[in-house]
Length: 189
Image (cartoon, rainbow, N blue to C red; front, side):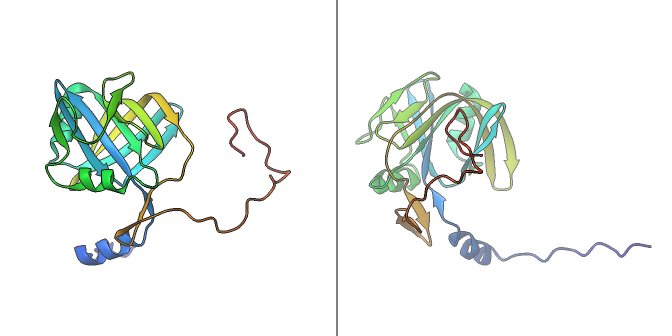
């Protein structure tokens, strides 16, 4: 006979928020375009999900108009911010500030393949076709299939304990380990 399953204790939202603040995350801006309307939202829940097929994942509040616009158009872009772009992060984290007609004031964008806005001078960007949308509690998880990507030199903007940070190396860079040969992509295995 097996013991009855124990019911999980409810975690207070404040305790969860405090624990989540201890996780350092990169800062990105999720964008899409629907007709002349542009949508953008600062997110910290962006990850590369799969290499084969190429997929990325980003979570945004399920009631955000950006979610419905991405569903309707099938396109989105994720722009990873660099150190020095805190003002852009704050702008698109402000409720209501991430929607514009034609262009965003003070933030230059361009389009690549899908027509979703890509922020000029961001560290890295992923222009994607929408693959799927999954429920995630009070968020929607948008899965995108990148059709174009680019990366530039610089340091990523990080968010930790309620503030912005720049990465700091723990030690000086070391020589490659002989047991970890570079692959064709330059990533060591």
